[in-house]
Image (cartoon, rainbow, N blue to C red; front, side, top):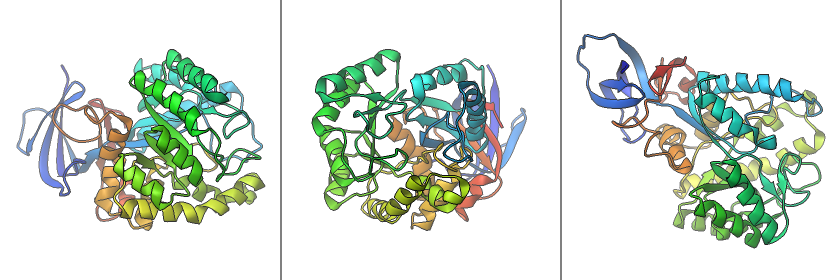
Length: 386
């Protein structure tokens, strides 16, 4: 049995609205076994100014290299080595849990298994494999194209057979696919309903890329668990999501990074134009969702243009910019995200019995949310990984 003691001069546990001072967190193997007022112990102790739960990123594309123009193509070997870097980027930036929402050839499950076997350092992972879209729909290049309820049902069953943790569906067009519009509905309510039915029968959650209003409604009425992006949310969408506890994963960073870098950085003109088109509506929908008390989880869409895998903090900074309370941001990045992913019983907060995933910070993020970047140590499953 391995033991680790962490003295949190300030502990933000992901549960309470008030941080606790001078707490001693005792870890045995991979679990937190006690949290009590600080006192001296015989063993060595890690002293940390601020301790939070490990952060989550609920929307990433783990194999996608970032920082290159849209025309740059990568071999599978190149992507493999970049993926190793991306896994370390998440860990080194305090992210101990990610949800991968779309990877060519279902490679993310192999990556997940390599992390679990200790072959490569990385965060805990939930994997969706390939997304499911209509023929020619958003993400068709790396997804499963399916039309009609029978094909859609089989596509979901195929992914579940391969071992996905979650089924990812494309309800609308998007920014990144040429020739489709973000506001356009794609898969129908009936098509999505059978995929969601199959996922739920297998005990899996579902998520949908959903930007346009009608497509969002189709997904909601089909029974989806989380709306990714949610750019054009009207009041009907907001009311339904709140009533049925549907999570919003806004990914504010994704269009923002495209707009900030533009065609000058080599991003395709059609992507830039669509990002500019959706950006303001995206922000307004997010503000309404927060103001009306919807459940929100944190995801960046890491892997889209100039949306770096080590920059989860940027999503938190954008949330603060758009009016979210700092403690709420930290809960969104930990407790809420764990709940969204269905792993809150074991992860997402600093509580006895949970996995020992902790971030030790130099300065208090309740004073400045950007302090989540000032990382001293990262602990995953009771092991110091940074």
